Each structure stands twice: as C-alpha cells, then as structure tokens.
Length: 113
Length: 121
Image (cartoon, rainbow over all chains, first blue to last red):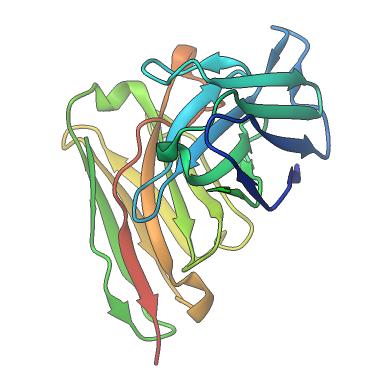
C-alpha cells in the first residue's frame, strides 16, 4: 500500500497568515499516461464529514475559496492556505487515489494562534 | 445527497448491514466507497464498488469479513459486515467517485453524514 505521511500533525497560525501542510507519498502518484497526480485534499470540521478541497493535486473544487492552493508532484505535495480565516479551523487530510488501496494521510489539525 | 443508515451497538462476532441512499445525482454513473473513522482518529478507506457493481476492492483490515454491494435500481449502496470486532467501531461514511470511462481511480465527492457502528460486549 502507498503510505501517505503528513507534516506537521498540528499547526497554529495567526489569522491572515499563511498555513502550509505537507504530504509525502511512499511512491509516486503521478500517472505517466496522463501526467496527472492522483492526489486529493479534504477538510474536516468537527462533527462533519470530510469535504473535498483539491483534486489532481492542484485543481480547486468548485466553490472552494482561492486561498486554498494545492501544489506538488510525484511524491511531495503541499496544501497552502494563503491567508487563514477563522472558518478554516479543521483537520486536513491528503489522499491518494492512484491505486485501489486508497490511503489517507494521518491528518493535520489546524488551529488559530 | 447521501444518507447512511443501519449503524447501532452490536456484540463482537455478530453481523450488521449498512445502507447508503443516494439522491440528487445519477447513482449508476458513480463508483461508491465506504470510509470509516474510529472515534478521535483519522480516515480509513474500507471498500469500493464500480459503477456497475462488477469490480470490488477492500481494505486489508476488512477483506474477507465485509462485502460491498449496490442496487442501481434503488439508488442504494450497502455494506454487509460480518464477524465484527471492537476495532470496527467507527463512523462509517459512504462517498461517491465520478466514474469517467468506468474508472474507480478518482477523488471522493460527495460524502454522506455517516452512521456510527459500535462493537462492544
């Protein structure tokens, strides 16, 4: 199975400042046939199901604010929140859908400093 | 909209079937997943079924005990869980993946609200 490792496990950022979450996969999730990274990011707030933010590593889901930016390729990926808002407090997960043994990162808890 | 049901408290070693009723999109055009989340823990993918029900895959921790199925005429997804263990205690979510050209390798969206399964003696 592809192991997804996020860092840090938790993060405290001041309102309006940048938050950066990293995700590393144990093998590449880049499909050479279509040059796409099979990597998604989700946001989960307490008591709610996960919400899709980003797919193909960098494509923002419809309706997701443009302060959420996905980047990276191969095995190393980043979710950046360019200017943290209070409503962004949540746990963030990366996930690979490169193989039929889909795996998530352990999650990164984002809080306000 | 995805609405899960069937979760409850059960004894170890028993069976339970979860359902996920889908509305608002063309169910038969989507692969469907079950994902679980133990209390206070992260997300664990459980199983996937292709849009036509022909292909099914399972996570290592449930393979041989759980069975995923679907009824496209009823817009409903199922998860039959046998030989339940305490470590199966979790909120179980169903989630959809758009099946472009029949693929099951896509992101999960949308998700249901989840149903809680508690396995305890």
